[in-house]
Image (tube, rainbow, N blue to C red; front, side, top):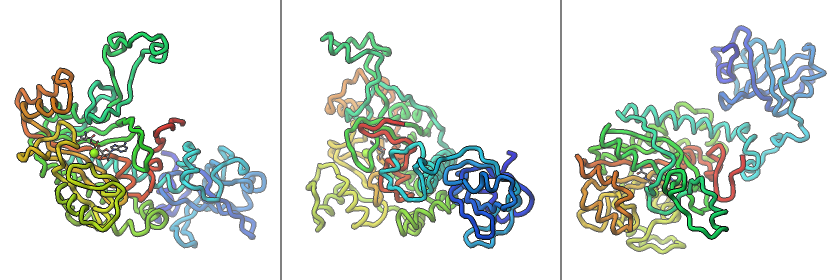
Length: 463
Ligand code: 4AD
Ligand code: MG
């Protein structure tokens, strides 16, 4: 392009000829010598470029001395070595044009630091803060690594539908999609006739693309989906969203250990790429968001993950001296406090938990020989808890249909899914990784609302 990004201009190698910079003012500082320093950021990197504005500029008094946080400018000048520490270059400006003013009286992002809670009220302006810039560049790095990694591993990128009739997780947490005026029908007392609805049947926003991905994995071999998923769970926690992004690989001929190894390689790739690609952003998280995170993630990217069965984990938790709000015994689902204990006290790092009781997992997971547990795997990490949930799938027709009956599912609704076991069935496995939870893990951000551009939670769909 005809102008230079701040990321480029900050490099020592950029020193030399005239360049043009376009961005937003972070701060302005006037020097006694009759010139000003303007810090400009354009989002291309964490740091800003220092622009030295000489008093000789024709608009120095009329405009430059009124510039403040949020104003957008174009600056043209020479890039020189900077005598200031912490920056290799600075610009000696010959010309500065103001594109847009930002009234210092009303612009919410003044120098004063705001809490993340407060910034959620300005979801349209918070991308301009240091923290959100860093979070979104890291989020982008993780998306990019996801496509790179799965393609390197021979997977095809597959788009599964957003609107669906089936509840993959069987948890009844689906958002209804309808063109019927349900309010008017309810007021009229008439029963809802689903055949008059757009799809001739009840339809919902997907909670997972897995069932659709399985149909393609048993044809193309290895596929992955990466898209938005929706859950109407009424949980107001720091790790649940009503709309979140999920990466779901599904692979034919994979068993549970192939699946676990894939998840581990994938997570390590995400970490290594963030550490390499987003150095300045990661340094910021290390200093301001979660001290020590750099060393911890670097270590996690190197060492093998710990594995544990659910049964062993329950034993550890039962013996733990920690006081839990929810008591543990074999058969209960693990709560956040239990996941914290396992990953923060017991292991201090990621743990892959396997072989959960069939009663607390969905119908599609492969029943083990003990008839009590399924070939499930959850990857838990410190600070966040579960970031991956997956399993080897039930490939045996008779066992699958039996499990569906036990779960109270109508086989007619899943006839196409059952067909995959009827015609050329094969062992296969996959998992789902919650993108936002990984961004939390990599950045140290405490609340999931602060790692997605526009969070959707109960009672919150503005912006
Ligand atoms: O464990 P879950 O429910 O698994 C599935 O949906 C499987 N069908 C995936 C598969 O095997 N293809 O969800 C997978 C991951 C969780 O580990 C978590 O990281 C994330 O999705 N997740 C959420 N993230 C944010 N908000 C929510 N409400 C989430 N629910 C699940
Ligand atoms: Mg899960």
